[in-house]
Image (tube, rainbow, N blue to C red; front, top):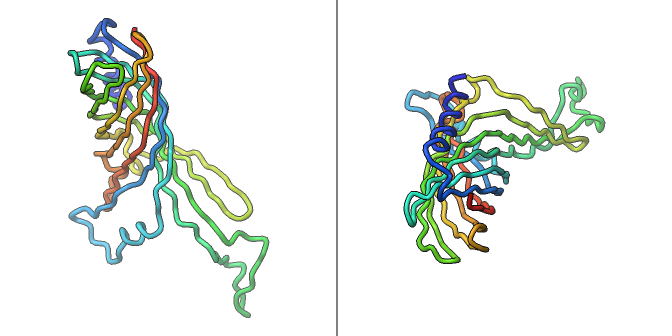
Length: 240
C-alpha cells in the first residue's frame, strides 16, 4: 500500500499543480534493449565467479513500452513532463543443449530418450508501471525542434513472465515475485535526445533516443543487479 500511495502522489502532484494553459498530452510507444549489470556487495564472500558465470550465460533482449505523457510549459524552452506507461525489462538465458535426465542413466550407461527434451532456454520479462518525471529543454521553437530531456521515473514492479523453450513446446508462466525476491519500487534515471516536428498549431510528432538506468537493485541480495535499457520512442503530441 505504501508503494501504491507513493506512485499516486507522483502522478497527482504535477497534474494538480498546473492548469491546462500551455499544456500538451502525448501518446508514446517505444522499443528498447534491456540488460543488467552485476556487482558483488562489499560483504559478499562467494568462492566461485558467479558474476562471470552469469555473464557468460545471460544476454539482453528487446522489449517494448507504451503510455501517455502530460507536458506543462514552464518557459519558452523548458517543459515539465509526467505521465504513466507500461514498460518491460528482461534478459535471455543461454540456450542449454545436451540436457540429460536421471531416467536416461542406468547401470549400462547413458541411453538417449527421444521423448524427453534435451534443449532449454529461459526468457525473463519484468513488467513495470512507470511514472516519468522529467524536464525537457527545446533548443528552438521552430517547426523542427531538437531537444534534450532528463529526469527520474519511479517504477512499480507488477509481475514476471518467464518463457521456457524446448524442442517440443514453448510455455509462459506469469507470477509476481515476493518482496524479498524483487524490490517493488524502483527509481530509474532517464536521459534522452530527440526532436519535435510541428504538423500544425495543435499537433506535433516526436522521436527520441532514450537511456534508462535503474538506481534500485532488482533484488536485495549479495549480488547487486541493476537493470538498464536503451532504445527509441515515437509519439504524437496535442495541445490542450
